[in-house]
Length: 276
Ligand SMILES: C[S@@+](CC[C@H](N)C(=O)[O-])C[C@H]1O[C@@H](n2cnc3c(N)ncnc32)[C@H](O)[C@@H]1O
Image (cartoon, protein in one colour):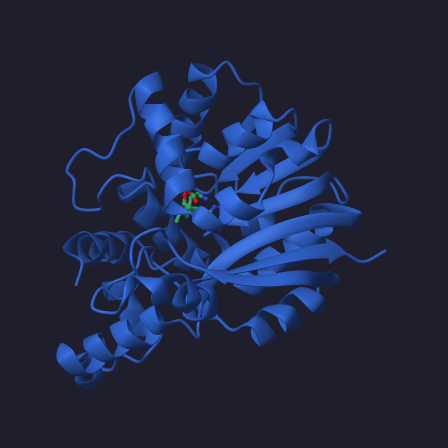
């Protein structure tokens, strides 16, 4: 169990009954800076800190390093939803994209702005809810949301908004948590049976909050994602399953690691194209 997660949840629940406000308070309390969740100081202060953050972001998310070209959007309008500390947004801007970064929290807006300034990169940064994007229809060539939309209180509403702001024929990429990952089931059983949370009314989904970041942390199958995105006019062009850099299941031989991660990793990535 992660104490920082439990405390952030309690703080959000004591502050308000509003579901999306709880989500926001959770992330204001524990902004995503790639520092340990338990550290009392999780800030990023200077240029060196931001360089380290970019290394941690790319090392920690090997799929992006191996499969995604942030330099392929020169002159295009790109949007990152849920920018966190702004690592991906800075990569888009450095690659020459006309880039906008949004996040639900003030913390993320502040850190992303500092990150861009420390690298002399130009981009727009705004506090905005993925469920109520304040952009006109058909505004972007590409929309990117890495590890974000499963944390919002209504993921389907986020997908509708992504579809609305994307130009016809525009592309997008989302990463969310994967329901058929080993982590989801192992952590779920640990929590429900090992910690007895089954008897306190928790289920496989709700128990994940004791181990996993965010006030909400939904897990999806590929079929669910295909249907949800498809119903908004977004056709999936490729699914990938991946995981973070660290070894997935410590006692198993190292040679099995890439295969396990490719099939039952914790992250499912959907790349898609807007119809029309
Ligand atoms: C796990 S962090 C990921 C940050 C960044 N994408 C990364 O990979 O480092 C999730 C981020 O999503 C943001 N977030 C959660 N719900 C959101 C929403 N409805 N609209 C915009 N941002 C949201 C949080 O504030 C947080 O910064």
